[in-house]
Image (cartoon, rainbow over all chains, first blue to last red; front, side):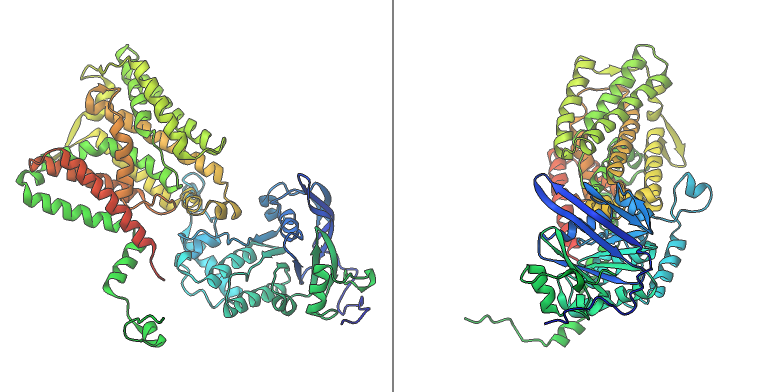
Length: 274
Length: 340
């Protein structure tokens, strides 16, 4: 069992402003309730895991935060300012990058092209503005820079087509793209779902590196050991609502599963909302 | 029950095993998709050069290129559509319709340039119609273009009242059929126009962000969308540019037949697809190039001309084309199974 009261989290600077904040998000799909009033707070330099059973509203929540879906009610704030995302492009412009479960990479294109997909660097002057020629050299140099900045050692050849990479390497490409362009928040939807142990390790290391760089990360995962190993706080979704927010220190994995499945309910003072 | 699998090899043995020559070829072809059609083309030219002595004469070769100019221009547009994992079954009839508009207007005394521009506008409009139906109404390209194929056919026949239009040989529209001499060979303006089209499209696909987005969209549309590409707009642009190719092809065909023929389009639909597929562009989208298509169109015409010059029954030309298509798709499937 857990320690019953652990609201005082070390390092929980309560005066710090969340970089991303959601209040009372409601999303309906016809008569099906996707989200029933969900609050979420995400602070800079933390990894917030979002867990929950199938149909608990994890993906819906993430899609609302990344602009892929528009909530029917509730507000989203970025850096304390209300944000209204009508598309993923809007969220991206606000500094929120998302890596989707089904790997948003183009298999036939090489690593560089994928890192810059839809954000190509154009040649300067006429060639770029009128002929829309891309500057391969600059993109390649930047790609190398990103990869070394992020301490990624698993991608040696950035001219390789993504389809020739392993699942873990592909995921690293997708995460690296999000990290390279996400100035505030990186959302990862099941980044390790299809990966082996070693590849999972690579991706989780990258997640921790992002936190070191001061980014806020939302990590959706079914894998409890991964969540408890990587996350600072754990947001538990249940039946479209929030069952509670805990930390790996305050609760055990069994507690988390119990809360997720409804076998146990969290008292308000037991949570780590920060 | 146990299964016997030859000599047991250790994992290390399997790992350290060198790639077999076949696997190397597979890798090489995977890296450069236009390579296999190029090899086929060179072999075909050599074989036909040996079989029929007239084949390699400059006149015969320049005639060969002239004959493939129309299919080539259409296939350039078809490549874009097939790269997006679609297909345009209407492209040949769209060209016939546009060429009829050009020729008939010119025949009725409209100045050649204006007739050309109006015909061009019709060609672009056919592309816009297909693009609209595919991207806005969200219909599958196969169905859309099957429908517009019939529509364009009907409009062409109604408009021409089933008659061919023959223009005065000096008409401006027929300039694409006139030749200029380049050394030993004579090349028509139509051939140069087609080559220019390939040059522009090849350049755009290779170096522009639009080209990259087109490949990404055809490869995995959802992934491209999630990456932030406006995939609907990219798809629409493919049909629009295909419409421009139709316009160019219509002008070239006017020069070739000296006017316009409402019954000429049936073969062009399938020939354009054949050229694209033989050129190594995958019907599943995202893979291929216009260079490959140019080679593919040359291969089809080489077989047709070569067999004709060798005095073979014309029906064997059709047979050869059929075998080529199936071979090309089989090779594409094999290349796709490449192991990293």
